Amino acid sequence: MRAILLIIISTSILISAEVFKDLSTGLIWEDSYATQDIKKDLSEAKVYCKELKLDGKSDWRLPNIKELYSIVDTNKFNPAIKNGFNNTVSSCYWSSSPDISSDSRTWSISFDYGYTNYYDESAKYYTRCVRDRQ
Image (tube, rainbow, N blue to C red; front, side):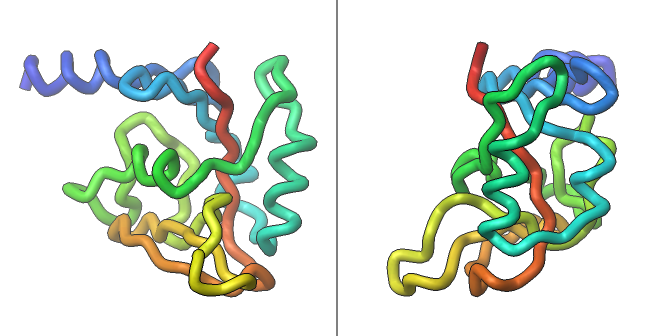
């Protein structure tokens, strides 16, 4: 148990009540109540992240599918997300990665079991913004 706790501590740090830093990737994630409260279409999700001001920073963006998948924990479900995140719905979250076989679909991750899928960009799903390493 002690070794597991040390591993968890070494891979992630909760910076504030609304921000989470993943030490394994260096990415800073929004973990505010808004990530589980409001559904947006893809266009609205991109604008939301671009306009987000959180933790004194304004350089937030919608994560690509690889970044979003980096916070999935497939050993868990409902939600299938790394320890330390407090505000996650077991549902789909947008990424910024388009489906290359369609002009109107974009990839997302469902945090119920951590699987990926693509959806029409007009569908309403949740949004979790990210910032690059500092």
